[in-house]
Image (tube, rainbow over all chains, first blue to last red; front, side, top):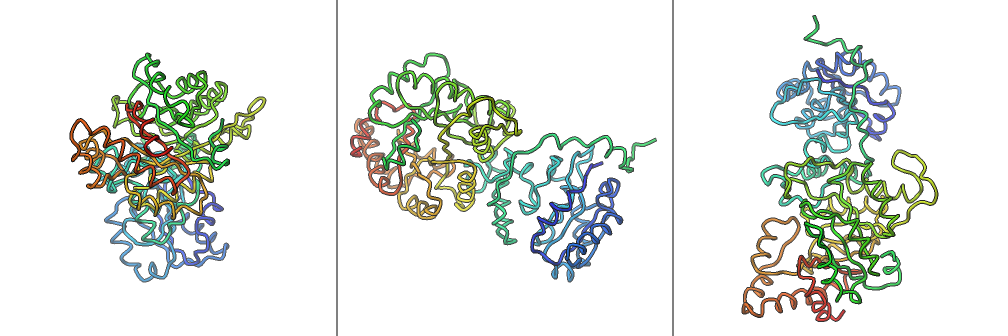
Length: 222
Length: 291
């Protein structure tokens, strides 16, 4: 089970910036168990956004947002609403945010930080996509994680080692920052890369015992 | 002396890279550098270059200072977390080192200990910011340093040959925001491309030292073209070198470097020579380039 925790609402509003029309996407899997992504969390977020003067264009709840195929089929029912939205706020773990970003050419914003994978790598099995760093940067990097896709987990842009878009560690592996750059260019958000990201707080990687206790989803519980 | 003071005086700054040995016999290197004493402004000591285990940058920098030579200490994020890095920065200040070049560092996988854990707790931008914070009397956690804070001139690197170039320039701007005061580049062989790069970064107003790598052979040029990011030695230069008779090849290589330096001189604020074991030839190159 992936442990997630809501990002502070101020951080979310700041990342939404001037975007007015927001589509809300929630997850009914682990995120629901952590109370960051289910029905209640979606209603609460909708209220918060409306209070802040945003328009919620649509709301969609998917059982497992970490399953890219499921994201594709469920979101296909909302194409009209998505087209009218400036961005998608995704209430789930880092894998779900990346699955959404891969599916729709819209700006995506994570609403939560992923603190621990708790033994589950998510249901999009081809790559390691989230290291549960506890300070989700997917908002800033266009929905592609620099911690997992960059061999050095750099947060402020590429090292000088990539050649022809490939990583210095493995010439068959894409440079994560090249992918991020291409994606940000595609969604018109290159200015994100001007912001200096401060050093990671590795203390954020540990879910508190309180979070572990309040998360009710546990298939191993007897 | 801080390198920035030389840039401020409008001096064309020349630095030479020093790769410490894998072993403790370091005198040989200092003997080779001696002829350069009056020719270069500072010696730039690498920090386990190419991720190969050897003497680090701190001790040789101190030894250079003891010999009355100016030193630039390279500091990478590959091997130490923020505790180690900040502590070594303080050690450098205690040992009288005034210039730091902060970089990410190669991945350990590329070196002679591919089994090593890659650290990268900080990236180059965050390292610059951390040193800047120490210079303001606080560590990264916000704790006060006791007594007077260290003072450094901070440098960083940029790769003008990277494709696409835009991410490099965005990161370069961040490095300046974080505290970088000068830049040195990856090896330059294409003057037009470098001129275009300098135009792109004019607004950043930071002194740039163009990188010069002495070409030891056509094979080395081809190897770099195939394996080193952002370096492209044009075919004309490779052919020119290959066309010289074997006994004149060294001379031809030095001529090529001297010509590049002459062409680059008016485009940037200094040059950084990476001689890779050819330190003995650097005085000739500089002389041929009129420096």
